[in-house]
Image 1 (cartoon, rainbow, N blue to C red):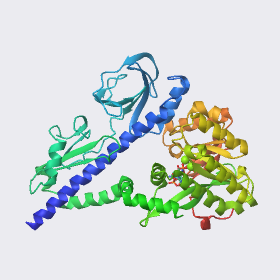
Image 2: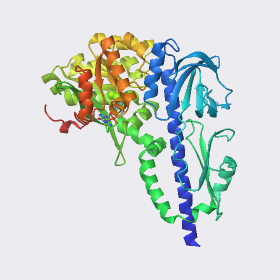
Image 3: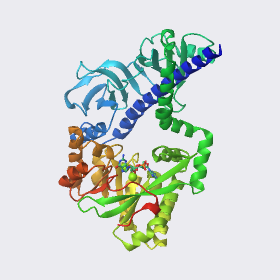
Image 4: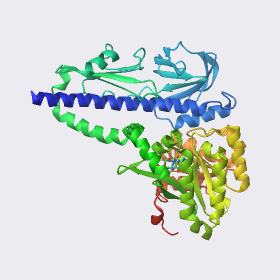
Amino acid sequence: MAGRHIELGQVDDELAGHNARLLAHALRVAQEGNRLIAAAADRGVPCSEADVATLRVLLFNATYIRDIGRTLGGMLRCSAAWGRLPQPLLLPPPAFTLANGRQLWVGATNIVDSRIVGDMVAYRDLIVFTAPDAFDGFPEPGSGIDAKLLTRDGAHVYRLFGRANDLDLDLAREASADQGFAPERRAWACAPEGGPDVCVVSRLRSDAWFQFPARVLSVAGALALAFLAGLCVLWRLHAGSAKTELRKAILGGDIQVHYQPLRQLATRRLAGFEALARWRARGQDVSPSLFVPLAEAMGLGRALSRRVTSQALRDLHQRLRDNPELYISINVSAADLKDAGYRNFLMDAVNEHGLTPANVALEITEGTPLSDGHVLSMVKTLRGKGFKVFIDDFGTGHSNLNYLAELQADAIKLDRSFTGAIGAEDAGTLIVDHVINISRELGISLIIEGIETEEQASYLLARQPAAVGQGWLFGRPVPLSEIVAD
Ligand code: C2E
Ligand code: MG
Ligand code: MG
């Protein structure tokens, strides 16, 4: 009896693991769609040449989204893939509308080309098309698992996997409380409240689970690695205690700052350093891509920015004084720019260390609404005082070609995903070339992130010898003590 118990426990673990992976994947797909929609919102003249170019830049960086377009009056007018349509195309009626106003089409025939079938999500005048293969690999081949992705209230189905038609969320909720020795196992899971409205319910068919005690172990191993290392970290952070830890770390000075060199592409001479926040929680490094947004959501964004700013200036002031051409580049948010307190703090810190504003660059990170009049005027004020302003992660978020000219930033930092595509994909190199041309036309300096290979460096050098590069080829982010003298 005990042996059978353990086996059933393992089967349930496998099913829960599968649910977690599927849910995490669904969240990634949903988040990417939302990110693109947010990034493309309120951009100049809809479907103008510049607008379609922006949509293309956004799309290029997407993994699960195949196209993004604009609608007017229920008609598709243009998209990144198809450009401006000669004639607007009527959308079919949506399958359902979510509480957040998003309309969904499930397994719809593509309106431009009927050979393409996929899901679509529309919000305001934007529509994104999920790639038909966005969920390839689910359920894992041979796993005997059926699954269904659906809304929290169970009323709407996003996607079916295997023979999942009859799977019911409420029944699974009831059943999973006490499945006893039932040969057919069921499990369910939902995205954290406040996130996308998505749950998964799944079943392991009784004919499947008798065969695989060995496989269960390998799946459990993969689960521990892939899942724990990824989204689970974020979910664990959502637990109250981890928030407390993050608060303590930020307020108590436990956030470290590492420095990554930026170098002239042509000479490899040092141009500056980027300050990157580091947090080690319970013996594990937590990525700033996870804890920075969390800190901001907790209202600790400003405290974090001040910590990083003062630490970076304290650490590097001597180098900057010895070489006034160098700068330290700091990641800030729109909230920081608008905050007179932060601007004064920054100016005081610069003065206190005997530096000039030209020694400091502020990186406006992705997510900054560059169309915000207040942000624009603050950028102008800061530049007027002599600070440099860089547009970070160019091409991925709110970096809008239309506003670039108005913003008059000192440099754009081409996101590393584009650099990674050099040589590998024609479309990737096209985008890189496009951005190089834009920066040249607007007279904005170019910084290229994520240079990892000599091939990438020489490709870029041939096209824009004046560019500055950042990436593992030129140096990884390191603590102060490991910065090598140049
Ligand atoms: P970011 O500002 O775009 O920073 C560059 C990121 O690219 C860093 O990731 C860096 O470690 C990584 N990177 C640099 N060169 C390479 C390369 O050659 N290959 C690859 N694969 N990666 C490279 P990191 O440190 O994980 O930071 C992630 C993001 O977190 C940053 O992206 C930035 O947006 C944010 N962040 C970091 N520190 C702070 C901070 O103090 N304040 C704020 N507001 N955001 C921060
Ligand atoms: Mg940055
Ligand atoms: Mg960046």
